[in-house]
Amino acid sequence: MRLANIVVGVAVFLLGLATTVLAWTTLPYTGDFGPGPGFLPFWLGLALMVCAVPVIIADLRAQANAEPLFRPETVKCVQVLGLIVGVFLFLPFLGFSVGLALITAGGMRLMGKHGWISCAATALLTAVFIHYLFGQWLSIPLPKGVIGW
Image 1: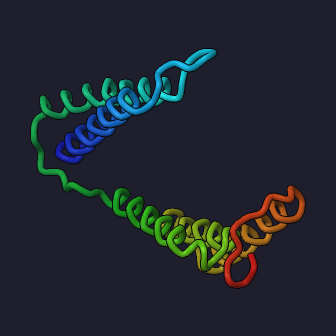
Image 2: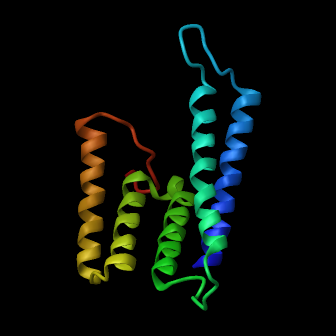
């Protein structure tokens, strides 16, 4: 975990640095009546850098031990992230209701060790609920897939 913490700490620091630099160079810091569009990203980037430094320093000082880089929980999280990315890539084909139902059922199956029947039932209920809540009751148009959901 030490190496993973160092790698992620450096990545978060670089993300904060890029956010701060881009906010400062491309967006106005102040507006006509107060903070401008560059105010929040500038300070969020600085906060990311400040939070990453103690993590990097603590793990550089820690003793190296023979822990695996990826724990089983990390592999599960990467699988769920892959599921989310895959569903969003196929969202124009699936539709929002069906896509969210697949993310819910897949996340249940991967993370919670639920059975196929409970995952399928939850997916069906999620799709129906999202479709009727947003599409019918709130009249918010959601992206529709091939089946119109």
